[in-house]
Each structure stands twice: as C-alpha cells, then as structure tokens.
Length: 103
Image (cartoon, rainbow, N blue to C red; front, top):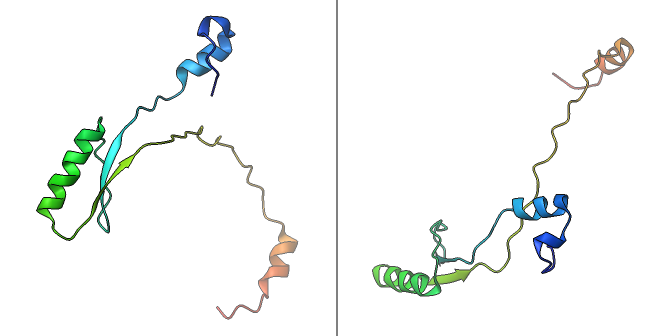
C-alpha cells in the first residue's frame, strides 16, 4: 500500500494503479457458531450487535458472534497461457503399451 503521499506527487502510472485498487470498507458480520456462514455485511458494530442479540433470542443455545473485518487482500487473476499440443512419440507409445496394468 502506498504511503500518505498525495496523488499529485505520484507518477501518472503509480497514481492510476492506486486509484484502480479495490476498496474495502469496515464491516461487521454475525456468525452463529456451528451454523452456515452469513453473507450480510453490517455497516456498523451496533447493527451487528443488535442482529446477534435478535438471532440469539430466536435460537436459544446457539452463540452468535459479531465478527469485524480487520484486513482485506486481493490478487490479480492468474495469467492465461496457451500450451502447445504436440504429436505423441510413436516410440513412447510402444514402450508404454505393456505397462502391466490389468485393464
């Protein structure tokens, strides 16, 4: 991550890279221990706490935990690479023909 340098002081290429990075905002989620994971993202801790309390009252015996986002990571997709297909070597075929496999 870049330091606090203003974008005007960065080179055009660096500034474009910084501006195009995905953004991650602080969020909270509620997880019922032993249950399926939630996908709802609360925008405040208070909202997540209220939801955890609501769910706990509806489902006695299940603990509902408020989870907070602390770090976020992202990577570029792997580069697609074409692999050349070659013709098989007839000598290798003959060599592998009797490989003792019973089928």
